[in-house]
Length: 178
Image (cartoon, rainbow, N blue to C red; front, side, top):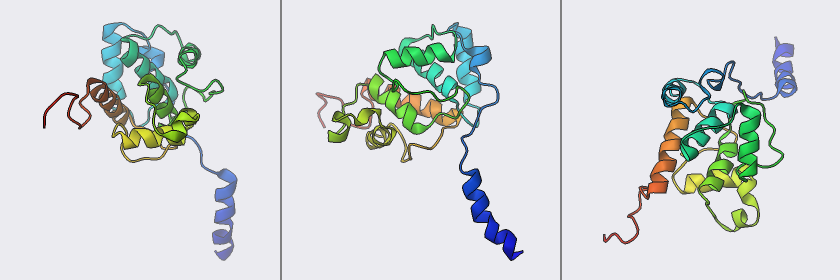
């Protein structure tokens, strides 16, 4: 028994932490821009325990452009990279769970969030700093860049992004008297 307990830390180190995967991303069936597909995509995503890269990037494009003209994940990556919303070397698989850090980079770029000194010096493409800035701005809940999102959490973030863009971020709008 003592031998087994002694081997557990070694076994843990050998297996390490693994990334969650989504067996069948919603984008395989609901990746289009048809209004009915969009509605069904958002509805089904809310029920998912994990949001994968392909679903998150499709959802982000739907939010930003009201459509996603990209046929697949490779095209979505290319689109987001060309907009400067993802690092050029981003190459995580479509069905890997999206991390808060990777999505924070895309959101910070989409919203043109400047952040503090570190973000000005190139930290906007570093998941840790992008996540910290979105937490500070109350777009993200307190969290770490390696954490993932459920579908409902992802939809909540998109809602907070929309609130922030509309000026409903908890602060009085410009020109409003207190």
